[in-house]
Amino acid sequence: MPVKQCKVCKKEFHVPHCREHEAKYCSSQCRIESMKKPPVSGVCESCGSAFERSRRSRIDKRFCSNHCRDKHYKLNAKPNTTCTQCGIGFFLKPSAKRGERSNGYFCSTDCYGEFKKAAYHGSRNPNYKGRNYDTDGYRLYVPAIPGYLAKAKKLHQAVVFEYLGIDSIPPGYHIHHRDCDPMNNAVENLVVLSVSDHKWLHKQFGNASLWAFTKEKIDLESLVSWSDNRERAQRLLPLNVCNQKGIDFNEENAA
Figure 1 (spheres, rainbow, N blue to C red):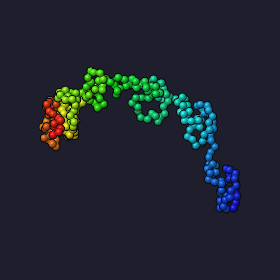
Figure 2 (cartoon, rainbow, N blue to C red):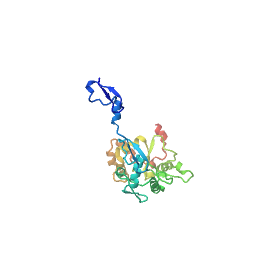
Figure 3 (tube, helix red, strand yellow):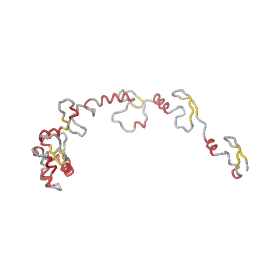
């Protein structure tokens, strides 16, 4: 068998006659080694340190790392964005400017922190202790006593509790705003309904129709005629807390 010399390790190896003219390497490992390109060496333009890396690396050949590359571009690139907080121009990658940011653009986390201090100050802060409504949009009843925030409850609940002389919502019941406005907590606008009746009213008529009925823009007979259960609609639509004084909801629930 013909004897050839490996171009990588210089070792002699035997090859069959059919591969005498094409064989160049003694093994697949030597073939892979021959395909590797020599590393790139140079001096980083950002930090000034010498470096050596593979030619296939995606890092810019002028820098030793992505950190140095980003730092160099940030210091030397032309400003294309103005900081919302301090007004200083700074460079921002085009990919970071896609779409609009509701709060604006900031040159540093310090500027963003200062912006949030002003933007979320006082009643605009979701954790504001003096707020008078909760995250569901209902007004809060806050007694003037120590630790009031922990004892705060929804205003419509407090109105119903005081009028009916109860301490809590009976199990299996909801308090319904007849005009579907959570800010309107007048006694005439509130009614205690079973969970089933409450869901049925909203699904049957919708908020707009219920609001129009309480504002006398739709009469009771017309609204009842739209229902698939007219007897139930006739019973629930006119009802409010004023008609429920003295009712024992626990007994009704048990029945």
